[in-house]
Length: 280
Image (cartoon, rainbow, N blue to C red):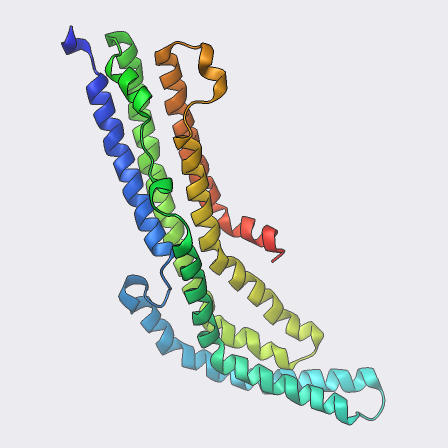
């Protein structure tokens, strides 16, 4: 009897949950292509602009301190009268350090815009939409009562996992903006170390590496989402050819669950992947 067939209800539940996931992914892509300057209407960035002059003032003072440290260190290392080219090199390093301290935010804005444009070039349309294969949808509709009951339990579990994964993806993207907003003011302090010797200036190298890994993280997140959704939309794996139709559908839904969880894992580990790929 049709009253014992739950296929339509299962399919409706899956479509609702997949629609939720697709909405979350669409929101993620719009956020990944957004500059932190415009995040949340520019409110958080406005706080950074208020705080930044304080760090610039402190960084400008530290430039002189680190320059003196570097000058004394190199004077001892040379153990002879400083030549003109050595003094000129120190003064150039001092000038560059002061310029980067004063203009570090402008440089960072250029990186934000470039990365946002790169994410916007990625195919964020049909390739990121999670849909149920039409063949599997027909199988779900025609399931008997016992099979549909098993499928309903699995669909409910899948729905819970997708909802949790959707919130985790949004949390990860929000946390990325938080990391960027926190490290931006610290740039003035990091660039002030350029005026010192090699040991001191290593600080700015470490800062730049971390900054690039956090900014480029958006591209890695976008690629992970596109590729993982392509895994799901590719259909059933070849080894399921000998199974019954309802068993193939079970495997198909389990693969969806696994791939969605893998998407979240890739998004959360995007910074580490980016750091390893570029040696940052």
